[in-house]
Image 1 (cartoon, one colour):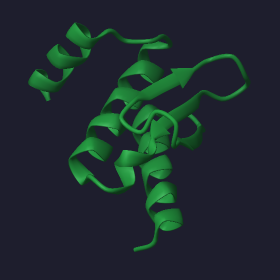
Image 2 (cartoon, rainbow, N blue to C red):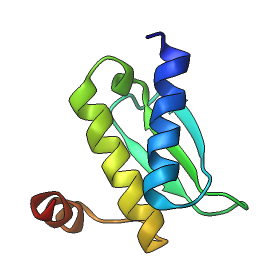
Image 3 (cartoon, helix red, strand yellow):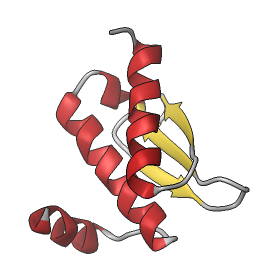
Length: 87
């Protein structure tokens, strides 16, 4: 699977789980970070490019994006950790 297909699959997974359309972008400047922005019509998920190299990191980024979108806000580290433990 090439990078473009992998990115498309990540976006589909987020959209299916969160129930809304999203814009997904890669960030090469901050390769180990993920952020969700709620400033436009659709949430914008910015994932660090390291997600393309590490499947576990990609899964964590996806789960974070889903939680943040469901909550409609940024989620802090502690809250995200509790979310992961429940699932």
